[in-house]
Length: 382
Image (cartoon, rainbow, N blue to C red):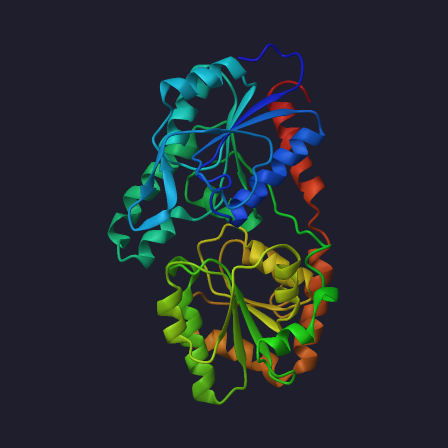
């Protein structure tokens, strides 16, 4: 639709660009910021709220939406209404980028393909796995069929890790998969942010190994595995202190299941970096992530992760070298890995140092430049 002259115009569609902060929209905002630096003209279409979690990067156009039943903090866009479509047509994009397989994404895909434009999508989460956590696994197969229909005929799709790309190819989502990895802000996430005084202020003794967990407190983050693992460590008499960073609708239930844990609440910026650096090891049992930003952030702070052997983490963590990968949901294996770190400080220090080295390869500008270069190639500007 664009005329091939002037700045490359990118229409980006998001289910949540800035109204609730998460790893996916942090990546999207960074990508838009890099587009602006490189002289592109991005325009973002997403649900909006009166008081968003953070200021949006670039131009954000609100689309009609309603709260998701039972998860009112999230919203679902009601497709592409006439006024928004008129704005899109006036913008005259050269390429369409979808970041969620929702109604808005489906309508934007249909519109872009109808205009003969390249339509690409980034995959940010394992949506099909969510239903298992809410006792709705019976509809998972139908959801998978819908996702394959959504992604299957796009120009390209971008996975954040090789492990996720392998899943997309193997399960028949698409063969046109490229990698859009994730970076880490090494000014914030650094071993230098470790502050024992801060830990002491939370009532944690210096000689007690701290197990860190970071994320929204929702069932799909594997809170049941965290609770069961802590119970197993208590049963074994393994000294530890669980430090939870984050908030969410499952917090009260989770707090009751992990007695003695410290809840630091939602943290951001330098405070979040300080929290990570205050951990002695990091626990990530989730299988819903396609990359695992939290795992990378821990690694950048030289904190060894103990993560589920799932998409994302399996591309980040070298098992037995820079952390541990254990079978998803295997409470005994999680407890074994953590106990080994508790009993052997030299081992966790060595794995932490190896994690730090691996994290240095994840530079945001280089990672986002790779996506922008694909835009240019697909539109004949490369």
